[in-house]
Length: 366
Image (cartoon, rainbow, N blue to C red; front, top):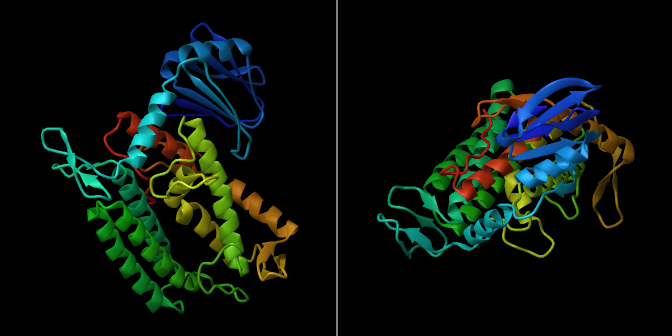
């Protein structure tokens, strides 16, 4: 159980929550573990086999405390909420911000015309869509560069060091560009160019013989490493979609990713800053430690590569274990788990959209 951002996250199987006056009582095997005043909560997230009394559900609905039920792996099952919540206002602001590519606030706070792809205030504070796209792109590039720098530090004499150093230098330049760019389309371009540089050097991060990687490809992936990366990105996208919905956001409406029917654009936005930290490093760990092998993948007649069932079980177990690892959130300064970071980021984004915090604080891996 963890209490972050006025949200109670309940992850222990067999936990039962009940109402006691105006407090939420959390019990495990009939032993009280936690008591939280209801007025201190804005939401309750229950993962896996967690029970709740009807009286508590009814009082939460009256008090505007949203209850979210997810599987133990983080897939959204249901969201319980009473009448007239603030979510409509939150989503309306999300839609306005996603469409706001032209507004600039003048020094007196009045609206004016600005750059067609973004906006900035005279005090340097970004407005509109760019205010969210810029920190997401910057954090993604910083976290990707950290993967390269750690490889250089851990294996100073490894083959490909020159390419890794070059890629690290290029990413540093892209980061500097991103921090001063207010045009959304240009930020998208910087992100795409930096991703190409990062994946061009990715092969040098693989130390186990027998694995090949000649650049990022997908739909379908054409080698085992790309198949592994795509699988992890899909898992993280499912988690991000659940996190966005649990926070009251519309997972279909993003900022970095444009709207497209059937695409969870906001979920794709949220995973960008976590790809390197959660997915890329885990994929490299499984490969370099020999926990999986290229023989665990099969090639389809169409030329794509798919993961076999035994390998998939190993990969899923590793992913769930990774999500349970303890970490200190860099912005909140609180201990949490890797799996809850995506939920915390979604709620930080919601707080920014509501005006509770001035800027969206992305996850930057330290």
